[in-house]
Image (tube, rainbow, N blue to C red):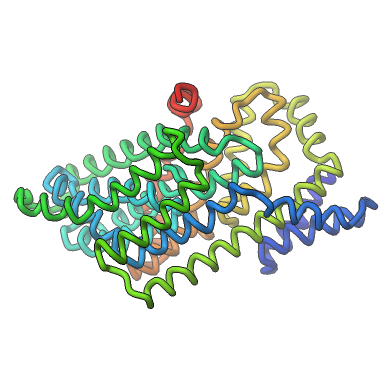
Length: 424
């Protein structure tokens, strides 16, 4: 009953417009006072939440992403991929998915991925006869790869909350990310094959392929350096974020000369705003998590689940349904920071690998990003494509089904998630 009342209070605060960080932190402080715990616990939790070396990666990856975004890197990536696969059946759609995957490897953000590739791909795809709902749905879904394919900001936050290995989470995201890209590509090719409006593209010349590939090569090299360096142990994820940031500056300022001081200033301001919002939410969630831990709510939830849900499969289904419902009116990071402190004990009690559960959680969060009414990627694509929310949501529906299919597959074949972390 206490859990239900706390969740109701939290949702009421969010519905009346209280910012997520202050709703979580304020409710946490209220619980400490009601429970007669020392209020100074809140200040200790606040300081400990931000006193984390790994969290430095969040603003640095966001800065890297915004610098590359302002430097027009997404346009170069899309042009290069389009030159190589554009003549395939559904080639532009395939190029869009691959471009989203490549940009995800240097951005760590779903909104940045959807916005960057969407701005380039939407005009090209609609010009080639792809139906608008399909185009919008593909871009909204492709953008979600930004929080699954490393380096993922939300996986960094998950690792901090659950004290899981960031490197393990990054490696675990590769298999499901490639699987999801394969499903998106397969669906796009079938869609183009049976669409009466689709018009194929002519095959690009070798000269076009070479010139576009050379333009995009430095960006792909930067992504490869960051990811390979993390996996090879050359540097930590936090050090990788700093190297990526410096690499993005060199790439856009010196090599490509596609960014000026005004663009850099705007990129820094955008990165600062996003970083401040994320870190405030993390701090609020830490206070909330500390308060509910003192109220023994995670232990009570764990006991309730172990008494009423005796199989991992049933637990995963219950959590999945809860996340789908929450995703209708909450954004991704808030869902994770509200649910994980409550679910962590049950995950441990049932013997679920926290790395696997993190990837499962992110996949369910991806569904939330493209489901109305609060799917952030839907709004990004709606703004870029000047479309109605219904048009974008209708196009995204098949991709939600593909994401849920991916969840089903990784449940039955855990090695898709865990093989790489175990080997490396």
